[in-house]
Length: 99
Image (cartoon, rainbow, N blue to C red; front, side, top):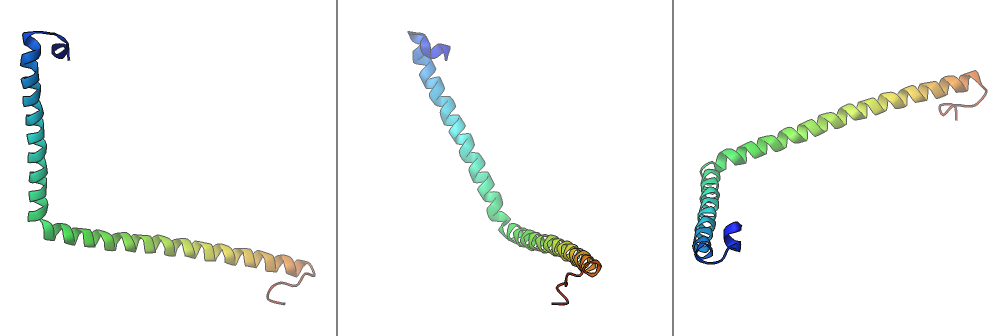
């Protein structure tokens, strides 16, 4: 940055140097992009199969979690229903089974 502020010969030399660095950086980005693209194209089948397996695994895990949660909810509802029916037996309030 100091070179760009100075006047004279240094600023004339700094601009081509900056341009060269920018072009080198752009070239490195392009090389990285094409290298990554080449890897993905060569391993397309592996990535497709891996993605499919990951999708199935994710769906199975989600289903398992949902099933476990549903079982807990059903268990909790059964305990609430049991508590309500016991309360209704102790009092003269008809329970849902007696209505």
